[in-house]
Length: 467
Image (tube, rainbow, N blue to C red; front, side, top):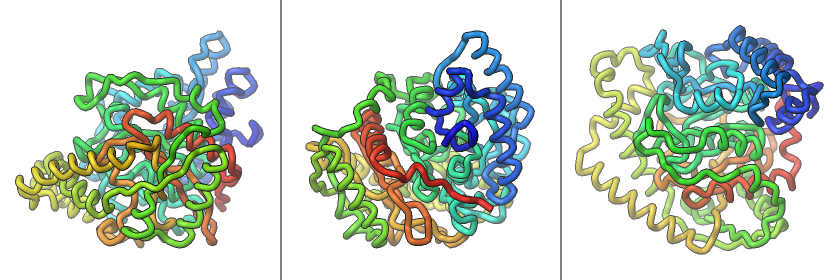
């Protein structure tokens, strides 16, 4: 990957070239815009491309850099945002008829922080309707497609974010994660997707789905790029009542240590070999990844977590109750303007009793305590991200998590940091994924493990070929 093929540069690679004035932000932005024009008609990753605005931003970034005012690793880097992130003066429509023409007056906090870091906004990305509506064909925007095979699903709800980064249509994208919606597209699109600790990244100005489960975070090609993005957006924000003032470390500095000697990693094997059985290819790829990490010096042991169905049921009650509270007024007044999947999933919350929600909150505390106890002797735990690789578009069941729950939602409930990254491909060439889960506010260890694994394997050299 070289500057001759700039859309496939990592953020770290492009930043090095830009800082040395060997790559122009204008040149890089034009390359992405040209690629979006060629491929977005097949992938439907973008709902809005800001062609003129992006070029104007790139020219301004280049002028600053030439004048000696380089802001850092994101200066001049083209990115895109899931279309639930408010952008002042640019529509943010949440994939719904209800919000068509909605133009925010101010940026989301994360939008503003990325702008301050010098990023170039290429456009807004496809999302499941209000981040819950599933792969739907009855909303104003067609569903995004998976670049590894356009007949397959990129997962959601950050579907356009996963598709765009994997296809080389932006250097990085922001997503949201209420039950896996950063990590799941990362898994099925072969990316690094980071759900930071609850409270680490502000959600102010991002369309809410669940007050106590929503997280904001990046999707990138590499773990190093995820660290660069997190550095720009982490920190306290008084606009978000759940925002933490925990100290923010230097994430890239942690990545300099390529070996894992002294780190203790636990395998939550019961979750994916007994409770919600993963496919043979997923389990084989996982076992190979564990051996790579062992070879890098990590100590491996087994840990026992509660069944994923228990986490899933608890999180579903909370998410549906909170989601209905957010949407109750419009569900009553304009139900016809929702897509069927979003309307049905949100309306379930109307049938949750106060006593159910109270018991779910109590169960949540018990599950958080059980998870912390299981992790008491390890620095992070390992498991797959999802039981299977991507199915064909439209094949995900409306309530897919009930029989074989994926392995993401437990850590929305506990609020812990979790990283999804590519650990191989199935026989059809679709990505497989490893998930690394850390202690609260210890994104540094999660990133360190993921980065060490990436450097020891060849998966980042492989890109999807799109006709």
